[in-house]
Image (cartoon, rainbow, N blue to C red; front, side):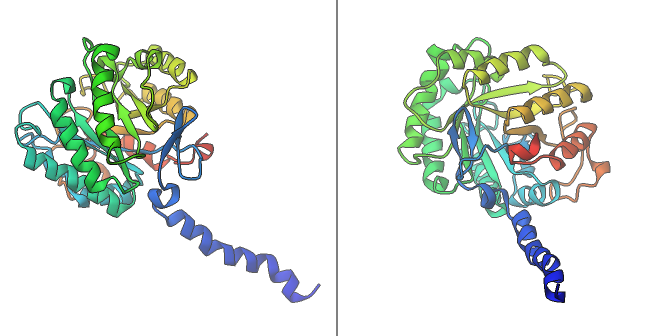
Length: 336
């Protein structure tokens, strides 16, 4: 055998290495492109199931001390240092300092995160962060119509039209009609980017949506929220039944701590939930990008929004979440 033939495998491997590295270096949006919903789950432009993972910003409300994190540089740092494929802009609506009180400030924060996500090549959930969205349908229609006109051509954008309906909000009588109106307004501008709809009882009653899903609209998913310290196997069983029945679910918000956002991380329960999300190829965003004095915050009080964020700047929850995200693969086959 000639020297050239003996060297051929090494030469081929060397030639392939840069291509493999280039593939690995591509951003999540470059890898997956436009998203859609097929067979009860989120898929990329090739039709392959995808599981996005990242972080949710805290309420955007003016004067709540966490709006300073709404900066494109923060999105870039999460993309580069934490390897997120997803961020969520939680645009406060009807609480003090929200979009109803300060439309200009909150719109600017939404745009900052969206534009940061587009520049960083990650996906972004634009969340109408309210517990009473049905009280402001006109404002929701105006907001999402405007954002769809601005950013609907980008594959990065995912709309979340209702964060967490309360336990007295009926799915079929209240939430679904509201969602259908807002979805119709979005689809008049943006025909295909995914839309996520909240479910009753702080987005836990996915079984209600499974029994009466939205008809006649494509690329719609339904919200599941959990906090590992409070929510355990019974909620997973309910969610699994909905998934097995074909309901597309997106975990737009989850926490390692109690449902009130405080307490120490429940590591064992968090690992159970992480396994559940991996097994079901669910996309998810952890709550929250914040230095508030509470267990769910990623950062200790006083942490600079612009970073850097060494491990000593992270809360126990922040360190746990960072480790989970570092190990996450967006391709579901690789995450099994």
